[in-house]
Image 1 (tube, helix red, strand yellow):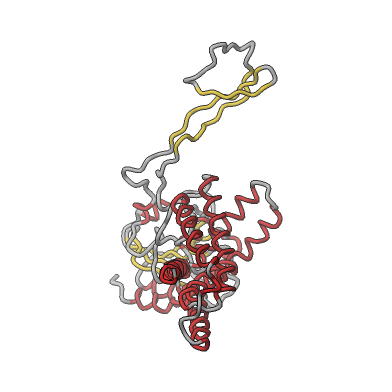
Image 2 (tube, one colour):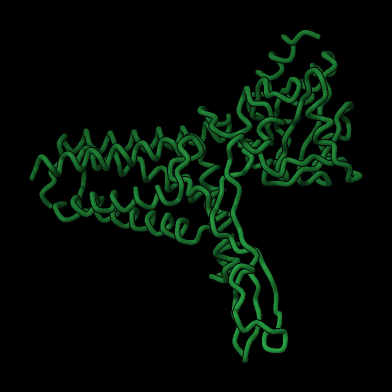
Length: 380
């Protein structure tokens, strides 16, 4: 039994550490997934005021959850304070199972974000994974008092503290400098126009037109293939018709809703992405709230002008953002929905260098000096 418990501990610990590290690579992605849950719950009428309020703390929740996930995994492996951590693990996995179960049973999510964007799992796969993981954790919980630390207390505590510090530092680093492993559709080397297309062989949603009628004070529904034998306009009174989804497909482009419009409202997406040569895109979500990046961008813009590379500022809030560029010539502002900007700009702001619509490279505001060096090295 001791050997079995040890094997289970290592399986659970490694899975928690791995899951946490994958998400730590992009904590903002998990925060956005949390906001998606909050929004859906609010729309369903579940404490809408609280759900909307939690949106502002999604990133903090994400960082705390990721850190605890990794630290808990380390604690399980070293066997440190198992009476405490077995309770915390059990509560955490029950919470995860609830989320993945809701994502699967509600049908409102394509992915639950359990392993981030690098290892996308369907809600069903995530739910099944969490059920098995719950069983493993129950074994640890039931035998928690028999699990003894495998290392001296001082060494175990040191490992826990170091794991916490490294996890927090790593998340802070990627939030400032972009994820180390870029698994998003706007990654380096991708052609944006190609990623805006539905993949070949994708299966579209399958739906059927459903009619709703009133008969004798009751509501009845049926499709065009199974009209009632006694159907008559004097008996059945039309209420409405709608498309009923019978099979969810996967016909969805990796990059969705990426529509760029001028300040006057003209769609310039295809013209910009089809433009020959190099193009610079500066993505800004809402308002960065600080101008520390602005001086570096001015230097970057000077280098871009010398190389005759046009620059476009893409924002969902051009009214506020326009003030940053009053004294910066050669910059064109474009409007875009906030959702694709969230995907494109994991750091706010982020700069892209394109060539014929393909992403040559991208940098966060903290690395604009590297962007300047790259631009200066470009041929005219």
